[in-house]
Length: 279
Image (cartoon, rainbow, N blue to C red):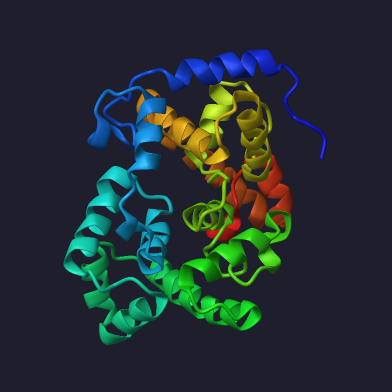
């Protein structure tokens, strides 16, 4: 694929500038690092991750819960609580057993979130790992999911065992890949917003965002994963979330109207950046 970035010097300068800005109160890492420089907070976080957060059961709970939710408010407090209260919840099998032992309402209380779509997504994700295990014959859950993450074709993700699960779109898929050790990005709306507003890239959808950030990482010599965290912390801290949410709502309304007119989902995705598979 042809390189998308032409003015590398300008991009490099912009990355350096935003990386060295302090975290703001709405930045994802502000609760841990206050007004530390964004790049310093990212480096610190990378070096001091709690190994308990990387148990496959916790990754599944966190990634599915995080879709379209504010991380500091709705995700981190619940995941921190679950880790403390359930030290043996580490494997995919232990998560499956826990879900089967509770009613849906009981699990909602445990998870800290009541959402049938996400509940079904989590259950289907666990079922998908059984097919992945048959394919690769790897018993260790993290190694198994890392193998899956290495081999998926993100340009044809809907044909993948996990990618074809209802309500799992490219951002959630990429989040899973990141948490299972792949040096990539989660192309959510916050990252796309920064690419458009700060770097003035045009027609940025999720697939294009992945390619852009990969190129930006090569230019800046910051890993793709770290650069993703820089963009997320900058965007969440420095942009007006309410204004952007309103713009996103308008885009979603347009996308749904196009769908009702019979326009193909792939065409809608290319035009608006809205992936209706996740709706």
